[in-house]
Length: 569
Image (cartoon, rainbow, N blue to C red; front, side, top):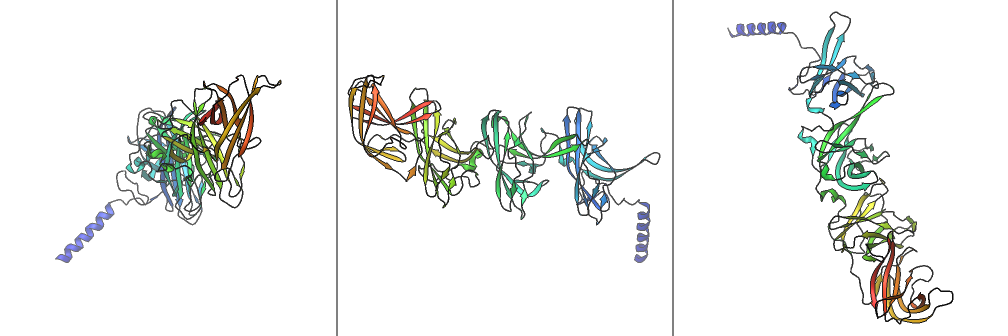
Protein backbone atom coordinates (compact mmCIF):
# COMPACT_ATOMS: atom_id res chain seq x y z
CA UNK A 1 0.00 0.00 0.00
CA UNK A 2 2.81 2.39 0.91
CA UNK A 3 4.63 1.60 -2.35
CA UNK A 4 1.48 2.39 -4.33
CA UNK A 5 1.12 5.85 -2.65
CA UNK A 6 4.78 6.61 -3.38
CA UNK A 7 4.20 5.91 -7.06
CA UNK A 8 1.14 8.21 -7.10
CA UNK A 9 3.13 11.08 -5.46
CA UNK A 10 5.97 10.75 -7.97
CA UNK A 11 3.54 10.87 -10.90
CA UNK A 12 1.83 13.93 -9.36
CA UNK A 13 5.15 15.77 -8.94
CA UNK A 14 6.07 15.11 -12.57
CA UNK A 15 2.71 16.45 -13.77
CA UNK A 16 3.12 19.65 -11.68
CA UNK A 17 6.62 20.22 -13.03
CA UNK A 18 5.32 19.95 -16.60
CA UNK A 19 2.51 22.42 -15.94
CA UNK A 20 4.77 25.17 -14.37
CA UNK A 21 6.67 27.13 -17.07
CA UNK A 22 10.44 26.94 -16.65
CA UNK A 23 12.41 30.06 -15.57
CA UNK A 24 14.54 31.64 -18.28
CA UNK A 25 18.25 30.96 -17.96
CA UNK A 26 18.92 34.67 -17.14
CA UNK A 27 16.69 35.20 -14.11
CA UNK A 28 15.49 38.66 -13.04
CA UNK A 29 16.66 39.68 -9.59
CA UNK A 30 13.82 41.11 -7.51
CA UNK A 31 14.58 44.12 -5.33
CA UNK A 32 14.42 43.25 -1.67
CA UNK A 33 15.43 39.62 -2.25
CA UNK A 34 18.90 38.48 -1.28
CA UNK A 35 21.32 39.45 -4.05
CA UNK A 36 22.84 36.51 -5.90
CA UNK A 37 26.59 36.16 -5.95
CA UNK A 38 26.80 36.92 -9.67
CA UNK A 39 24.63 38.40 -12.41
CA UNK A 40 25.01 37.32 -16.03
CA UNK A 41 23.77 39.26 -19.03
CA UNK A 42 24.80 36.38 -21.34
CA UNK A 43 26.13 32.92 -20.63
CA UNK A 44 29.75 34.18 -20.51
CA UNK A 45 29.42 37.89 -19.68
CA UNK A 46 29.09 38.77 -16.01
CA UNK A 47 27.48 42.14 -15.17
CA UNK A 48 27.57 44.49 -12.18
CA UNK A 49 26.58 48.08 -11.52
CA UNK A 50 29.44 50.28 -10.35
CA UNK A 51 27.36 53.35 -9.51
CA UNK A 52 24.09 55.19 -10.10
CA UNK A 53 23.63 58.96 -10.30
CA UNK A 54 20.27 60.64 -9.78
CA UNK A 55 20.74 64.40 -9.39
CA UNK A 56 19.06 67.66 -10.22
CA UNK A 57 20.69 69.50 -13.13
CA UNK A 58 19.84 72.89 -14.69
CA UNK A 59 18.05 71.14 -17.54
CA UNK A 60 16.20 68.54 -15.43
CA UNK A 61 17.09 65.33 -13.62
CA UNK A 62 20.26 63.57 -14.73
CA UNK A 63 20.30 59.79 -14.46
CA UNK A 64 23.60 58.04 -15.13
CA UNK A 65 24.83 54.50 -14.64
CA UNK A 66 28.28 52.95 -14.90
CA UNK A 67 28.20 49.19 -15.39
CA UNK A 68 30.99 46.64 -15.54
CA UNK A 69 30.98 43.66 -17.91
CA UNK A 70 33.45 40.80 -17.48
CA UNK A 71 34.09 38.28 -20.27
CA UNK A 72 34.53 34.85 -18.67
CA UNK A 73 34.90 33.17 -22.05
CA UNK A 74 37.98 32.38 -24.11
CA UNK A 75 37.07 34.44 -27.19
CA UNK A 76 36.51 38.09 -28.03
CA UNK A 77 32.89 38.89 -27.23
CA UNK A 78 30.79 41.76 -28.49
CA UNK A 79 29.09 43.94 -25.87
CA UNK A 80 25.47 42.68 -25.84
CA UNK A 81 23.29 44.87 -28.02
CA UNK A 82 20.63 45.40 -25.36
CA UNK A 83 18.95 48.55 -24.15
CA UNK A 84 20.00 49.62 -20.66
CA UNK A 85 17.09 51.00 -18.67
CA UNK A 86 16.65 52.66 -15.29
CA UNK A 87 13.47 51.85 -13.41
CA UNK A 88 12.17 54.27 -10.78
CA UNK A 89 10.42 53.50 -7.53
CA UNK A 90 7.23 54.62 -9.28
CA UNK A 91 7.56 51.90 -11.90
CA UNK A 92 8.63 54.23 -14.74
CA UNK A 93 11.41 53.04 -17.03
CA UNK A 94 13.89 55.34 -18.79
CA UNK A 95 16.10 54.08 -21.59
CA UNK A 96 19.64 55.35 -21.01
CA UNK A 97 21.85 56.57 -23.82
CA UNK A 98 25.25 54.87 -24.18
CA UNK A 99 28.40 56.98 -24.01
CA UNK A 100 30.19 57.55 -27.31
CA UNK A 101 33.35 56.28 -25.58
CA UNK A 102 31.88 52.89 -24.61
CA UNK A 103 33.73 49.79 -25.73
CA UNK A 104 32.02 47.61 -28.34
CA UNK A 105 33.80 44.35 -27.53
CA UNK A 106 35.35 42.58 -24.54
CA UNK A 107 38.60 40.61 -24.66
CA UNK A 108 38.73 37.22 -22.88
CA UNK A 109 39.08 37.63 -19.09
CA UNK A 110 38.76 41.41 -19.48
CA UNK A 111 36.49 43.85 -17.61
CA UNK A 112 35.12 46.93 -19.36
CA UNK A 113 33.26 49.86 -17.86
CA UNK A 114 30.34 51.30 -19.82
CA UNK A 115 28.58 54.59 -19.08
CA UNK A 116 24.95 55.41 -19.79
CA UNK A 117 23.00 58.62 -19.21
CA UNK A 118 19.74 60.45 -19.79
CA UNK A 119 18.33 63.82 -18.71
CA UNK A 120 14.65 63.78 -17.77
CA UNK A 121 12.60 66.98 -17.83
CA UNK A 122 10.91 66.65 -14.45
CA UNK A 123 11.23 68.43 -11.11
CA UNK A 124 9.76 65.99 -8.59
CA UNK A 125 11.98 63.72 -6.54
CA UNK A 126 12.19 60.01 -7.25
CA UNK A 127 14.57 57.10 -6.77
CA UNK A 128 16.11 54.63 -9.19
CA UNK A 129 15.34 51.11 -8.02
CA UNK A 130 16.96 48.90 -10.65
CA UNK A 131 18.99 48.75 -13.85
CA UNK A 132 17.84 46.34 -16.56
CA UNK A 133 19.17 44.96 -19.83
CA UNK A 134 16.32 44.59 -22.33
CA UNK A 135 16.44 42.77 -25.67
CA UNK A 136 14.21 44.61 -28.15
CA UNK A 137 13.11 42.90 -31.36
CA UNK A 138 12.08 45.62 -33.80
CA UNK A 139 11.34 43.20 -36.64
CA UNK A 140 8.09 41.83 -35.26
CA UNK A 141 4.77 43.59 -34.78
CA UNK A 142 4.12 44.50 -32.11
CA UNK A 143 7.78 44.74 -31.19
CA UNK A 144 8.91 42.24 -28.62
CA UNK A 145 10.82 43.17 -25.44
CA UNK A 146 12.57 40.63 -23.24
CA UNK A 147 14.20 41.61 -19.96
CA UNK A 148 17.48 39.70 -19.86
CA UNK A 149 18.70 40.89 -16.45
CA UNK A 150 17.73 43.32 -13.71
CA UNK A 151 19.95 44.40 -10.82
CA UNK A 152 18.64 46.29 -7.77
CA UNK A 153 20.52 49.57 -7.20
CA UNK A 154 18.64 51.46 -4.47
CA UNK A 155 21.47 50.97 -1.98
CA UNK A 156 24.11 52.56 -4.24
CA UNK A 157 22.13 55.46 -5.68
CA UNK A 158 23.89 58.85 -5.34
CA UNK A 159 21.60 61.87 -5.17
CA UNK A 160 24.20 64.53 -5.98
CA UNK A 161 26.56 66.71 -3.97
CA UNK A 162 24.02 67.38 -1.22
CA UNK A 163 23.08 63.72 -0.95
CA UNK A 164 23.49 61.67 2.23
CA UNK A 165 24.71 58.13 2.79
CA UNK A 166 22.21 55.63 4.14
CA UNK A 167 24.82 52.91 4.64
CA UNK A 168 26.41 53.36 8.11
CA UNK A 169 29.71 51.96 6.82
CA UNK A 170 29.97 54.92 4.43
CA UNK A 171 30.08 57.42 7.32
CA UNK A 172 33.66 57.60 8.58
CA UNK A 173 35.02 59.24 11.70
CA UNK A 174 37.98 61.60 11.60
CA UNK A 175 41.22 59.58 11.53
CA UNK A 176 39.45 56.38 10.43
CA UNK A 177 41.17 54.61 7.55
CA UNK A 178 39.26 53.82 4.36
CA UNK A 179 39.82 52.35 0.91
CA UNK A 180 38.06 53.22 -2.35
CA UNK A 181 37.47 49.74 -3.71
CA UNK A 182 36.11 51.06 -7.01
CA UNK A 183 39.53 52.61 -7.73
CA UNK A 184 42.11 50.53 -5.85
CA UNK A 185 41.36 48.15 -2.98
CA UNK A 186 44.99 48.04 -1.77
CA UNK A 187 45.56 51.77 -1.18
CA UNK A 188 44.41 52.89 2.25
CA UNK A 189 43.74 56.53 3.15
CA UNK A 190 43.57 58.25 6.51
CA UNK A 191 42.67 61.91 7.19
CA UNK A 192 45.54 63.52 9.11
CA UNK A 193 45.02 67.28 9.38
CA UNK A 194 42.69 70.08 8.34
CA UNK A 195 44.12 73.59 8.66
CA UNK A 196 42.88 77.02 7.61
CA UNK A 197 44.96 79.39 5.49
CA UNK A 198 44.41 82.75 3.85
CA UNK A 199 45.45 82.97 0.21
CA UNK A 200 45.22 85.61 -2.54
CA UNK A 201 42.21 83.63 -3.82
CA UNK A 202 40.50 83.76 -0.42
CA UNK A 203 40.48 81.55 2.67
CA UNK A 204 41.05 77.82 2.17
CA UNK A 205 40.98 74.72 4.36
CA UNK A 206 43.89 72.42 3.53
CA UNK A 207 43.22 68.72 4.04
CA UNK A 208 46.07 66.22 4.38
CA UNK A 209 45.49 62.51 3.70
CA UNK A 210 48.02 59.79 4.45
CA UNK A 211 48.02 57.20 1.64
CA UNK A 212 49.59 53.76 2.13
CA UNK A 213 50.03 50.92 -0.35
CA UNK A 214 48.94 47.73 1.45
CA UNK A 215 49.59 45.57 -1.62
CA UNK A 216 52.68 43.81 -2.91
CA UNK A 217 53.02 45.77 -6.19
CA UNK A 218 53.74 49.40 -7.05
CA UNK A 219 50.52 51.39 -7.36
CA UNK A 220 49.59 54.88 -8.52
CA UNK A 221 47.24 56.89 -6.33
CA UNK A 222 44.09 57.25 -8.45
CA UNK A 223 42.27 60.49 -9.04
CA UNK A 224 39.37 61.21 -6.71
CA UNK A 225 37.68 64.27 -5.25
CA UNK A 226 37.01 65.57 -1.75
CA UNK A 227 34.43 68.29 -1.11
CA UNK A 228 33.37 70.14 1.99
CA UNK A 229 29.68 69.97 2.79
CA UNK A 230 27.51 72.45 4.69
CA UNK A 231 23.77 72.29 5.30
CA UNK A 232 22.81 73.55 1.84
CA UNK A 233 26.18 74.29 0.27
CA UNK A 234 29.08 72.37 -1.21
CA UNK A 235 32.71 73.55 -1.23
CA UNK A 236 34.44 71.90 -4.17
CA UNK A 237 37.91 70.67 -3.23
CA UNK A 238 40.95 70.58 -5.50
CA UNK A 239 43.77 68.06 -5.42
CA UNK A 240 47.05 69.96 -4.93
CA UNK A 241 49.52 67.37 -6.21
CA UNK A 242 49.78 67.96 -9.95
CA UNK A 243 52.18 65.11 -10.73
CA UNK A 244 51.40 61.41 -10.59
CA UNK A 245 51.98 60.01 -7.08
CA UNK A 246 53.13 56.37 -7.01
CA UNK A 247 53.55 54.12 -3.98
CA UNK A 248 55.86 51.16 -3.59
CA UNK A 249 54.56 48.25 -1.46
CA UNK A 250 54.09 49.43 2.17
CA UNK A 251 55.16 52.98 1.23
CA UNK A 252 53.34 56.01 2.65
CA UNK A 253 52.92 59.48 1.16
CA UNK A 254 50.75 62.51 1.78
CA UNK A 255 48.25 63.97 -0.66
CA UNK A 256 46.52 67.31 -0.12
CA UNK A 257 43.28 69.05 -1.03
CA UNK A 258 42.39 72.75 -0.90
CA UNK A 259 38.75 73.33 0.03
CA UNK A 260 37.47 76.92 -0.40
CA UNK A 261 35.79 77.16 3.00
CA UNK A 262 37.18 79.96 5.13
CA UNK A 263 36.36 78.39 8.47
CA UNK A 264 36.00 74.72 9.32
CA UNK A 265 32.87 75.72 11.25
CA UNK A 266 31.20 76.44 7.90
CA UNK A 267 31.52 72.79 6.95
CA UNK A 268 29.65 69.91 8.54
CA UNK A 269 31.55 67.05 6.89
CA UNK A 270 33.80 66.01 4.02
CA UNK A 271 32.65 63.90 1.07
CA UNK A 272 34.92 61.54 -0.87
CA UNK A 273 33.85 61.22 -4.52
CA UNK A 274 35.08 59.36 -7.58
CA UNK A 275 35.03 61.07 -11.00
CA UNK A 276 33.06 59.75 -13.96
CA UNK A 277 32.58 61.00 -17.51
CA UNK A 278 29.96 60.58 -20.23
CA UNK A 279 30.93 61.29 -23.85
CA UNK A 280 28.09 62.88 -25.81
CA UNK A 281 30.20 62.74 -28.97
CA UNK A 282 33.84 63.00 -29.98
CA UNK A 283 34.06 66.63 -28.83
CA UNK A 284 31.64 66.92 -25.92
CA UNK A 285 31.68 65.14 -22.60
CA UNK A 286 29.88 65.54 -19.30
CA UNK A 287 31.93 65.13 -16.13
CA UNK A 288 30.24 64.19 -12.89
CA UNK A 289 31.12 62.50 -9.62
CA UNK A 290 29.76 59.80 -7.33
CA UNK A 291 29.92 60.04 -3.54
CA UNK A 292 31.66 57.18 -1.73
CA UNK A 293 32.21 58.20 1.88
CA UNK A 294 31.40 60.95 4.33
CA UNK A 295 34.11 61.97 6.82
CA UNK A 296 33.28 63.70 10.09
CA UNK A 297 35.29 66.85 10.77
CA UNK A 298 37.96 66.86 13.50
CA UNK A 299 37.98 68.96 16.61
CA UNK A 300 40.66 71.62 17.01
CA UNK A 301 43.22 69.28 18.57
CA UNK A 302 42.78 66.37 16.18
CA UNK A 303 43.16 68.66 13.18
CA UNK A 304 46.88 69.05 13.85
CA UNK A 305 47.71 65.83 15.67
CA UNK A 306 50.06 64.53 12.97
CA UNK A 307 52.86 66.97 13.77
CA UNK A 308 52.18 67.88 17.40
CA UNK A 309 55.05 67.43 19.86
CA UNK A 310 53.52 66.34 23.15
CA UNK A 311 56.16 67.89 25.43
CA UNK A 312 57.23 71.55 25.67
CA UNK A 313 60.27 72.20 23.53
CA UNK A 314 63.71 72.63 25.11
CA UNK A 315 65.96 75.10 23.34
CA UNK A 316 68.86 73.77 21.26
CA UNK A 317 67.39 70.28 21.01
CA UNK A 318 66.96 68.64 17.61
CA UNK A 319 63.43 69.11 16.33
CA UNK A 320 61.37 66.00 15.57
CA UNK A 321 59.93 66.47 12.10
CA UNK A 322 57.18 64.59 10.35
CA UNK A 323 59.16 61.65 8.90
CA UNK A 324 57.33 61.98 5.56
CA UNK A 325 58.18 65.65 5.09
CA UNK A 326 59.87 66.65 1.82
CA UNK A 327 61.81 69.69 3.09
CA UNK A 328 64.17 68.58 5.86
CA UNK A 329 66.40 65.71 4.77
CA UNK A 330 67.27 63.16 7.49
CA UNK A 331 70.96 64.17 7.33
CA UNK A 332 70.11 67.75 8.35
CA UNK A 333 69.57 68.54 12.02
CA UNK A 334 67.48 71.60 12.89
CA UNK A 335 67.20 73.15 16.35
CA UNK A 336 65.53 76.29 17.66
CA UNK A 337 68.33 77.94 19.63
CA UNK A 338 67.02 81.41 20.48
CA UNK A 339 63.66 83.20 20.67
CA UNK A 340 63.49 86.77 22.00
CA UNK A 341 61.06 89.67 21.75
CA UNK A 342 62.43 92.97 20.34
CA UNK A 343 60.82 96.42 20.52
CA UNK A 344 60.49 98.49 17.38
CA UNK A 345 62.63 101.64 17.34
CA UNK A 346 59.84 103.74 15.84
CA UNK A 347 57.09 102.15 17.95
CA UNK A 348 53.86 100.48 16.91
CA UNK A 349 54.95 96.82 16.98
CA UNK A 350 57.14 94.20 18.54
CA UNK A 351 59.25 91.64 16.72
CA UNK A 352 60.01 88.09 17.74
CA UNK A 353 63.38 86.91 16.48
CA UNK A 354 63.83 83.14 16.20
CA UNK A 355 67.25 81.67 15.44
CA UNK A 356 67.63 78.15 14.08
CA UNK A 357 70.78 76.05 13.96
CA UNK A 358 71.14 73.87 10.86
CA UNK A 359 73.74 71.12 11.00
CA UNK A 360 74.90 68.87 8.16
CA UNK A 361 75.50 65.49 9.81
CA UNK A 362 76.50 63.73 6.59
CA UNK A 363 79.88 63.32 4.86
CA UNK A 364 78.92 65.37 1.78
CA UNK A 365 77.60 68.88 1.06
CA UNK A 366 73.84 69.28 1.48
CA UNK A 367 71.49 72.06 0.32
CA UNK A 368 70.21 74.40 3.02
CA UNK A 369 66.56 73.46 3.65
CA UNK A 370 64.13 76.23 2.73
CA UNK A 371 61.41 75.86 5.30
CA UNK A 372 58.89 78.46 6.44
CA UNK A 373 58.12 79.39 10.05
CA UNK A 374 55.00 80.65 11.77
CA UNK A 375 54.30 81.72 15.36
CA UNK A 376 50.91 81.07 16.92
CA UNK A 377 49.95 82.96 20.06
CA UNK A 378 47.98 81.56 22.98
CA UNK A 379 44.91 83.32 21.53
CA UNK A 380 45.36 81.53 18.19
CA UNK A 381 46.72 84.50 16.25
CA UNK A 382 49.15 83.47 13.50
CA UNK A 383 52.27 85.46 12.60
CA UNK A 384 54.26 84.57 9.49
CA UNK A 385 58.02 84.60 9.78
CA UNK A 386 60.27 86.57 7.42
CA UNK A 387 63.42 84.63 6.65
CA UNK A 388 66.71 86.53 6.61
CA UNK A 389 67.60 87.89 3.19
CA UNK A 390 71.09 86.44 2.74
CA UNK A 391 71.44 82.70 3.13
CA UNK A 392 74.11 80.18 2.32
CA UNK A 393 73.02 77.74 -0.39
CA UNK A 394 75.04 74.70 0.73
CA UNK A 395 76.01 73.25 4.11
CA UNK A 396 79.47 71.70 4.41
CA UNK A 397 79.73 68.40 6.32
CA UNK A 398 79.71 68.75 10.12
CA UNK A 399 79.17 72.52 9.94
CA UNK A 400 76.39 74.32 11.84
CA UNK A 401 74.82 77.38 10.22
CA UNK A 402 72.55 79.80 12.10
CA UNK A 403 69.68 81.55 10.32
CA UNK A 404 66.92 83.68 11.79
CA UNK A 405 63.28 84.62 11.17
CA UNK A 406 61.48 87.76 12.33
CA UNK A 407 57.80 87.84 13.30
CA UNK A 408 55.98 91.16 13.57
CA UNK A 409 53.74 91.11 16.67
CA UNK A 410 51.32 93.53 18.32
CA UNK A 411 52.69 95.52 21.24
CA UNK A 412 50.38 93.62 23.61
CA UNK A 413 52.02 90.25 22.92
CA UNK A 414 54.01 88.96 25.92
CA UNK A 415 55.29 85.76 24.29
CA UNK A 416 54.52 83.65 27.35
CA UNK A 417 52.77 80.79 25.51
CA UNK A 418 53.70 80.34 21.87
CA UNK A 419 53.66 77.60 19.27
CA UNK A 420 56.39 77.59 16.66
CA UNK A 421 55.26 75.91 13.45
CA UNK A 422 57.80 74.74 10.89
CA UNK A 423 56.15 74.67 7.47
CA UNK A 424 56.70 73.08 4.07
CA UNK A 425 56.00 75.89 1.62
CA UNK A 426 57.25 74.16 -1.53
CA UNK A 427 55.53 70.78 -1.97
CA UNK A 428 52.05 72.22 -2.63
CA UNK A 429 52.92 75.91 -3.06
CA UNK A 430 51.48 78.45 -2.40
CA UNK A 431 50.05 76.54 0.56
CA UNK A 432 52.03 75.82 3.74
CA UNK A 433 51.92 72.40 5.37
CA UNK A 434 53.11 72.01 9.01
CA UNK A 435 55.93 69.50 9.44
CA UNK A 436 56.68 70.25 13.12
CA UNK A 437 55.08 72.16 16.00
CA UNK A 438 56.97 73.30 19.08
CA UNK A 439 55.39 74.43 22.34
CA UNK A 440 57.65 77.21 23.52
CA UNK A 441 57.85 80.77 24.90
CA UNK A 442 59.98 83.86 24.48
CA UNK A 443 63.18 83.84 26.53
CA UNK A 444 63.91 86.41 29.21
CA UNK A 445 66.75 88.91 28.69
CA UNK A 446 69.97 88.55 30.65
CA UNK A 447 71.62 91.70 31.97
CA UNK A 448 74.34 90.40 34.30
CA UNK A 449 77.52 88.60 33.29
CA UNK A 450 78.13 87.43 29.76
CA UNK A 451 75.65 88.64 27.15
CA UNK A 452 74.15 86.07 24.79
CA UNK A 453 73.85 86.81 21.07
CA UNK A 454 73.60 83.18 20.02
CA UNK A 455 75.93 81.73 18.78
CA UNK A 456 78.13 84.49 20.25
CA UNK A 457 78.79 85.23 23.90
CA UNK A 458 80.09 88.75 24.60
CA UNK A 459 81.65 89.91 27.87
CA UNK A 460 82.22 93.65 28.41
CA UNK A 461 85.40 93.99 30.46
CA UNK A 462 85.35 97.79 30.31
CA UNK A 463 84.33 100.73 28.19
CA UNK A 464 85.44 104.35 27.84
CA UNK A 465 84.35 107.33 25.78
CA UNK A 466 85.99 110.59 24.73
CA UNK A 467 84.41 113.65 23.08
CA UNK A 468 85.99 116.00 20.51
CA UNK A 469 84.90 118.75 18.17
CA UNK A 470 83.71 117.27 14.91
CA UNK A 471 85.76 117.33 11.76
CA UNK A 472 85.23 119.88 9.02
CA UNK A 473 83.77 117.14 6.84
CA UNK A 474 81.08 116.25 9.36
CA UNK A 475 77.74 118.04 9.55
CA UNK A 476 77.56 117.26 13.28
CA UNK A 477 79.65 119.46 15.63
CA UNK A 478 80.89 116.80 18.03
CA UNK A 479 82.67 113.48 17.65
CA UNK A 480 82.89 110.70 20.20
CA UNK A 481 85.36 107.88 20.45
CA UNK A 482 84.14 104.78 22.19
CA UNK A 483 86.65 102.16 23.34
CA UNK A 484 85.32 98.69 24.19
CA UNK A 485 87.31 95.93 25.83
CA UNK A 486 85.49 92.70 24.89
CA UNK A 487 85.77 88.93 25.13
CA UNK A 488 83.86 87.31 22.27
CA UNK A 489 83.32 83.55 22.17
CA UNK A 490 81.62 81.37 19.56
CA UNK A 491 79.29 78.56 20.68
CA UNK A 492 78.79 75.23 18.90
CA UNK A 493 81.33 76.19 16.21
CA UNK A 494 78.50 77.71 14.22
CA UNK A 495 78.76 80.14 11.31
CA UNK A 496 76.62 83.15 10.43
CA UNK A 497 76.42 85.41 7.39
CA UNK A 498 76.12 89.15 6.74
CA UNK A 499 72.38 89.16 7.51
CA UNK A 500 72.92 88.13 11.12
CA UNK A 501 71.59 90.58 13.78
CA UNK A 502 74.08 93.17 15.03
CA UNK A 503 75.31 94.31 18.41
CA UNK A 504 74.31 97.94 18.98
CA UNK A 505 75.67 100.29 21.66
CA UNK A 506 74.20 103.62 22.75
CA UNK A 507 75.85 106.37 24.77
CA UNK A 508 73.29 107.93 27.11
CA UNK A 509 73.64 111.09 29.20
CA UNK A 510 72.40 111.61 32.74
CA UNK A 511 69.01 112.77 31.50
CA UNK A 512 68.50 109.66 29.36
CA UNK A 513 69.19 111.39 26.07
CA UNK A 514 70.95 109.31 23.44
CA UNK A 515 74.26 110.94 22.59
CA UNK A 516 75.16 108.53 19.84
CA UNK A 517 74.76 104.95 18.67
CA UNK A 518 76.79 102.41 16.73
CA UNK A 519 75.75 99.06 15.23
CA UNK A 520 78.54 96.49 15.05
CA UNK A 521 78.32 93.31 12.92
CA UNK A 522 79.42 89.87 14.08
CA UNK A 523 80.89 89.00 10.69
CA UNK A 524 82.72 90.81 7.89
CA UNK A 525 84.67 94.05 8.17
CA UNK A 526 84.79 95.89 11.54
CA UNK A 527 83.13 92.94 13.22
CA UNK A 528 82.88 92.49 16.97
CA UNK A 529 86.04 90.75 18.21
CA UNK A 530 87.95 90.06 21.42
CA UNK A 531 90.25 92.80 22.66
CA UNK A 532 90.05 96.59 22.67
CA UNK A 533 88.17 98.13 19.77
CA UNK A 534 87.63 101.84 19.19
CA UNK A 535 84.69 103.26 17.30
CA UNK A 536 83.73 106.79 16.28
CA UNK A 537 80.28 108.36 16.33
CA UNK A 538 79.11 111.91 15.63
CA UNK A 539 76.52 113.82 17.65
CA UNK A 540 74.88 117.23 18.21
CA UNK A 541 75.32 116.84 21.98
CA UNK A 542 78.40 117.67 24.01
CA UNK A 543 77.94 115.53 27.08
CA UNK A 544 79.93 113.03 29.05
CA UNK A 545 78.12 109.75 29.31
CA UNK A 546 78.04 107.51 32.32
CA UNK A 547 75.73 104.89 30.78
CA UNK A 548 76.18 102.47 27.90
CA UNK A 549 73.16 100.55 26.64
CA UNK A 550 73.77 97.32 24.76
CA UNK A 551 71.19 95.98 22.27
CA UNK A 552 70.72 93.23 19.76
CA UNK A 553 69.30 94.97 16.69
CA UNK A 554 67.60 93.46 13.65
CA UNK A 555 65.90 94.77 10.53
CA UNK A 556 62.28 93.79 9.89
CA UNK A 557 59.94 94.61 6.97
CA UNK A 558 58.45 97.36 9.21
CA UNK A 559 61.73 98.86 10.37
CA UNK A 560 64.43 98.31 12.97
CA UNK A 561 63.69 96.41 16.18
CA UNK A 562 65.99 96.30 19.21
CA UNK A 563 66.34 94.08 22.25
CA UNK A 564 67.95 95.72 25.28
CA UNK A 565 70.32 93.14 26.75
CA UNK A 566 72.42 95.17 29.18
CA UNK A 567 72.84 98.62 30.72
CA UNK A 568 76.45 99.33 31.76
CA UNK A 569 77.60 102.11 34.07
